[in-house]
Length: 531
Image (cartoon, rainbow, N blue to C red; front, side, top):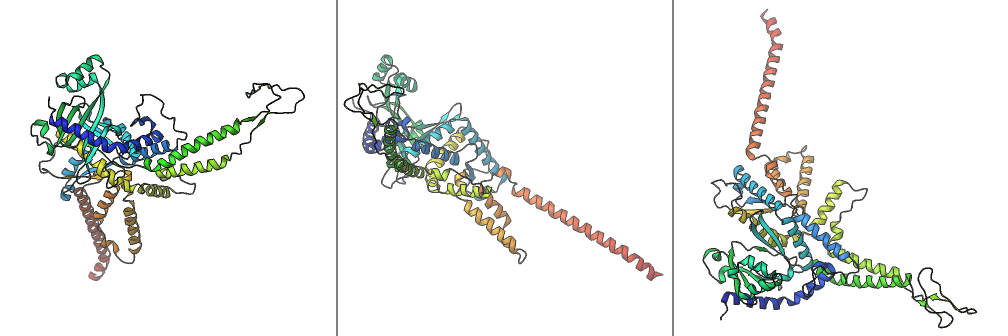
């Protein structure tokens, strides 16, 4: 029986991508062995729950990786503080209060959905994979209960390809499910006979499944879900049977790379850069431990005659020797230089911490430092991660926010938009602490300029050159101040109009008082003249 051509395409693509990825697997396995042992089963077949720290004699790399992952999560995608806003590409709409309020209400809905879903734990897991392996993947799907469901995919399961722009546009995943779960997930009528028999005989034995998501251009299918921009198909690799076909309106995966060479598809990570130092440190720590053991419990020099065996080295142990002999048991001096070994280990630890930006991320404030100095140092340290921010915004944040927004919009989770909006393009503005830190230099220049202008105001009217409204809007954009805490342009105009009216009334009252006072002074003189 001939195999389905679509299933054959999936199997052929899997064989090709699997061959291309083999060189990366050894690298990932070595990184995981030393820095993320809970995921150290890429090329090794390991039992679940087994001990995986047998190669680790120093935990500096593990702790540094945890710190960088937590820092990226806190500085980029922490739900506790806004990390993005939506705005219109048409700047005129950004000045319209009704249009702006609707977009802000959509942003509020997205934050609520993120908070109620499993976004927090899955994005944190994604950062671990990104820092360890240089490549990470997350699946974003609709959910009946929480509107959105996120799932970070293990690096050993994914095979990726790029489009002409260097963006990941297709992903093939090989994963395992219990045989009975396959029947429940895809329906017994869609499962081949070999899987049905497996589910009856060994229901909890795991079987492989292939899932491919790719642009639909290669199939040109235009029926139902299969006609969507991205084609999805599940295949049983053993029988070549198609278990399920479907489609997506957007690419359902986000696949960020930490750093990437131009001729490679998979990314490279700080853990890969630190791998040589990590292996050296563990070897040195193992040697130092053995040297310390020899000094604490040294080998003994025992005469070959005079003592009765066995030699007892336990506390309080008694050793018998023949009367009349002067031989004695002495420890062997191995001449170990422990301070030298400890200094060399500390050098390796420092190099590992530098690879993971530990010194930059840990803010230390001295007793003589002011709050402003601490803030400035913190911003300077975050700016060191600026080169990473650009790739994470384009490969992680932008597709993630776009996919979430489109799902919620199709499911009518947003308020009804104003009729005049139509099909307006929406852009993403990033306001996370890391994004703000890249703009603080501009803010410092502005505040310095305002300070200088203020000192010159007594000499010349230099503030006539400053557009105050534009200055306030620019500072609002740099700091990411939400529009809900800022007054609208109409409200500002009304306040200014009322202020002008009050000033005019006060001036009129002062003029009337001055006129009355002048009339009071002139009255006696007029009376004298008339007399």
